[in-house]
Structures are given as structure tokens and as C-alpha cells.
Amino acid sequence: MRVRQVGALVIAVGGMMVMVPACAGEQRGPRQSHNPAPQSPCEKKCDEAQEKAAEKCSEITAEKEREKCQTDAYEQAKSCKAGCTNADDDKEKCYKQCDDEAEECEADCRKIPKEDKGRRQKCWEGCNEANGQCKKKCK
Image (cartoon, rainbow, N blue to C red; front, top):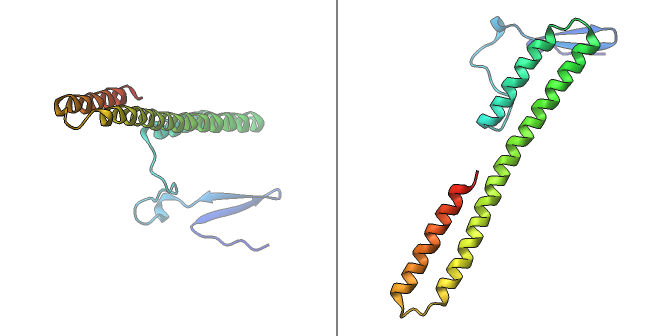
């Protein structure tokens, strides 16, 4: 078996390979994130909670208990991040619903004869105001 070493130490232990990251002294330039998408504040909060949990897990000496602790921390972070995504999706759905309601309102405004400019203008303003109020309620 061939193992290529790139800035890290690879150790074979009992048929399992373990990779240890390079020490900080070997690092050149700013640390690059491996996450291609920027994280939201919600996702960062989830990661921070996982890191704290992982620190506590590292204090556990029994291997099985430590692995369970690490798995639980990962699952909690995964669930937390799913909640962040759902919240973002819910807000987008809410905005879309507001826009759909505004379209219906505007369709009613279009039914008002063009000659009745004052009534038509008030209708459009009412639609815009209602849309703004609707979107303020989206969370």
C-alpha cells in the first residue's frame, strides 16, 4: 500500500489509517476554509456548539463513550444546521406568499378604469403598503 504525505502525518494503527494535521509551524499563509459556501450566523453558532461539545468529549477516556459523545455532538450540529436552513426557506416562502398576495391585489387595481386615476392610485398604494407590512412579519 502506498501512502502519500502532504503536510500531514499519516499513522497506520491496527489496520486503520489515522491522519494527523500538520502542525501550525508548517502552515504557510492564512488558513483556508474547506467550506465552499459562506456560513450564516446561525450555522456558525451550531459549529461553535459542536466544538464545545467535542472538547468535552475529548476528556472522556473510554473509547466507546467518547465516540458516542462525538457522534451525538455531530448529530446535534447537523440538526441545528437543518433548522437554520428551514428558517431561511420559511422566510423565502413567506416572502413569496406576500408577493403572490400583492399580485392579486394589483390585479384588482387593474380592474379599476384608467379614467378613475385617484381610486386606482390609492389601490396601488394600498397594495404596496400591504406587501411591506406582510414582509415585515416574515421571520
